[in-house]
Amino acid sequence: MPTIRSLLAHPEERRPSPPAPRADLFRVFGAGIGLFAIGLIVTLILHLTGRGSIEAIAVCGTGIVLGGLGLLWARRQR
Image (cartoon, rainbow, N blue to C red; front, side, top):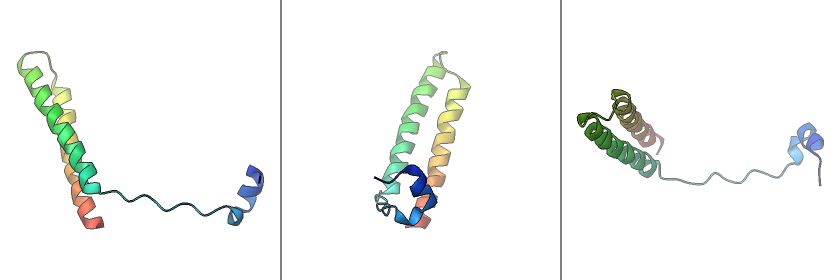
């Protein structure tokens, strides 16, 4: 069993890293956008009943926008 010091001194002796798992980023970003959309609906209803806050609505809206940008990025990376 090699020591940490020997692995740091001679990185070529390490085993190769496993390949990165493949993921469909369209599904990942789509699921995130969907969850933020549900959160936005809930926070809007809570705000209309006087129990919610503008900050929660802004967070959900920001999540949807950033998820949309993520979808555009994922499309370019295919």
